Amino acid sequence: MELVHVLKEFMLTQAVSGYEENMARKMHSYLGAYTKQIEVDRAGNVIATFPGTDKDAPSVMVFAHMDQLGFIVRKIEPNGLIQVDRLGGIPEKVLPGLEVTIRTIDNGAVQGVFGNKSHHATSADEKYKVDLVTSLFIDIGARSKQDVLDLGVHVGCPVSYTPNFRQLQGTMVSGTAIDNRGACAVLVKLAEAIANLKHPSTIYVVGTVWEEFSIRGAIFAARAKKPDLAIGLDVALPGDTPDLSSRYDIGLGKGPTVTLYNFHGRGTLNGTIAHNGLYKHALRSSEALDIPLQEFAALGMLTDCAYVQLEGNYIGCLDMGFPVRYTHSPVETCDLQDLENLTKIVVHMVQNIDKNFKIGRYCIE
Ligand SMILES: [Zn+2]
Image 1 (cartoon, helix red, strand yellow):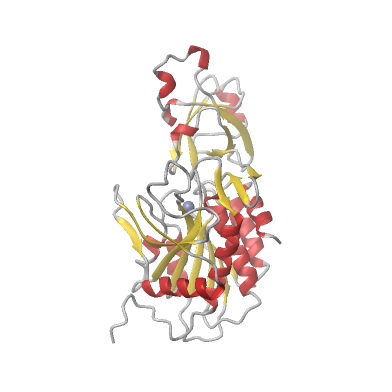
Image 2: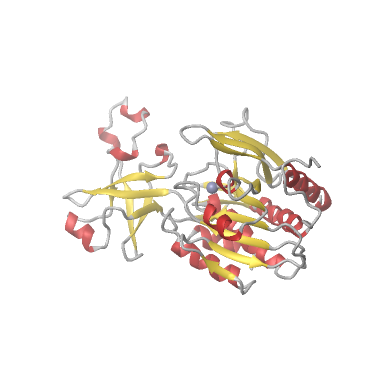
């Protein structure tokens, strides 16, 4: 199975944070093809275990979040229009005029659109201001609140951009939820590769829940499996568009990424400073395979690694990933080569962790 096919299937699968079941089923089926040791924990994390050959080698968890951001139905108007709140970091600038899909209480799908105030009646000032999601409404074509309820759309139902996938020029692809289905596709290819390899470490390949909601879903897998090390795969922000060129160096098609630092201070106060041993290990793999690795550091971002590292007596964590343009919009864009190369580097890394690998942050004897 080619990575792009898995990616496309995952991008077209709706799985808003807290409603990951459709993605969890797919991950379970894909990962389950490569190991008999596969389970879904109580929260919905899909955990595939690949036992190592040396019980003294540190175990490693490689994970990626399966969920995507979206909205939650907040109020249904008497005339059948629907109001929503954000579930995750929605860029409100992109919303008016978008197609959305509402997940019903029975896991069905209802199509709708975010209306915008008719352009002909929009005043000059209104044209240049962003409408908050709370001032927009979704139109599913219903005539009344009862119509909406009869379709199984209730307060609390999840909504997302209508899933889409398109191939752009060359190896570029664009669409919904490349964050983080790109990394989920990498997990599938990783599982496929390590299923046929001998590796000293026990490797847990895990699709996680709740990242876009609370950034803490991976905790349950870390608590259950108690890995010594963890590698989280997620997006990084490239600086190869005019709006970010003064801020970041990395670019699409120039290699997978390794994040040395991230931190989120707006009410969260957490982040990840890379585990040095894992970072050096990533550099060694990049050199051995002659695949460039792009170094990334960013304020205002946070991943599950920030919480996974706090489990037990500390789990050495490294954020790796791939550059994605236009994050959290319905046209996220990435280069398939970065995903292929991320897979190769992570396969090489997990295969080459042995009992001499230092799991502490410092090696003071
Ligand atoms: Zn993400």
